Length: 112
Length: 498
Image 1 (cartoon, rainbow over the protein chains, first blue to last red):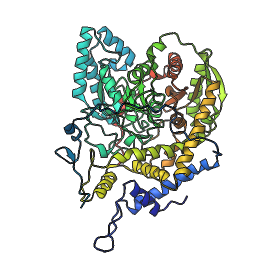
Image 2: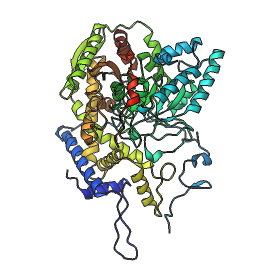
Image 3: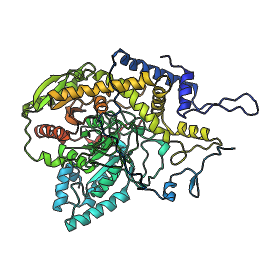
Image 4: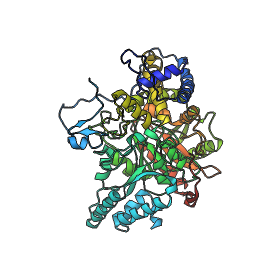
């Protein structure tokens, strides 16, 4: 598995750790701006490469017919009544918000 | 009042019961100790006001002879990933700095209802990702036995606080060894209960199929009291086990006899990479168990060596999903931008530290289209093999004994440059989380340099009593857990690295 800067930047974008690709405005060429520096990228490339190289040891195992395990302790999936419980009042829920207005969380405009 | 701090939690509880000490006086002693040894950086937040109110209420009940539980009036600490109503909770991350939760974790709520005095929130690796306490935006906690060394992680603050007698017990969380490894490095007891034994509701999530709340204490009986306080069914956690929890401390009342107990020694855990002094200490402790009547049985857990690879695919995968919630919208850090997606990326980039970003990138990669089956799918299948190892082993033995950490506490800064080497040091603890079985780290002696050594006891699912009874047998025959670090050294600890 070859890890390079482009792959790491693409993964970082999926994880919202890197700015999204700049949108073209008025047909102008996009100006790319980044949060991850080349030094940070190189470090991540190096570390990811080392970890994935180690994980490749799993390829040696014959896993045919082996079911995946998602939890160590098999527990039944419980269903509950679809009833309101333990709700927080709106003003309490908004106390930690970086920006709030009346009963809403405020975010930058998303619809033109 | 200083002498009171050397009591175990169980001994203190008896004195509170008899009215020989007041909860307020005990709290004062704890707060004084925390202040005197503040260079250990064990606490991210000390809630003096809340603790004082809880202690006064406990004293009121003591006078009326209406104590609520063995923990009533007992000062304890919570790792900072336990959500606590009205008390700041950061999970060791800048992205949650200043957040004051509007509710209590199930464990926090239970501990308050039992009258315990929650002194504060302890230092940890950011989002519990780390084995040294150094992955923190703030001063890392230090080891009371040698302040130039790490206390282990990620529950390093809780382990160091218990070892330094700042509190009588503490809670941490254990996703890959984060209670057991710092317990071993700080010379205290630390239990990771069976997955599902303790509710995860209100615990800041790291890897949800592995995370489990666990107590740290200075005796097996203390661990039993702390476990009883938080164990039990919670309808608010879909993975909480609907199985009644026994009164664990009562199970230690009968004389302990290990005759007929088969203790398995897995060859894989005594393989290369184990520090000779650690191996020596662990083997001596195992010989003490044998002296108490236990039968030693050589066993094999053949997939142990794959546990690191499986863990470092599954845990980051789950973390990358869990940490998607930190978007600067509803709580936590926001770096403003006129565009929503840029605002989210800027906030996450500024709020998360390097280790957290590394794991999010790794986790996002192994879950991404084209790589999912090759990494995540494969890791989940090998996880089945790891679990089967334990199923087979427990057909032949009642307990398994191994080292907790292959090495004693290491110097601050010595392992930060090589994340893979740091991950490989978790080899003795990871399989336990992958399989969901309980594991208890037990003090097992000291190196020549005076650093604690930990023995790990592993039991079958929900067999915590068997672990505690074996630990009690060892504790009755040794004095490791009664040795104290020389806290005079903490006053002159070196400056933390920049």
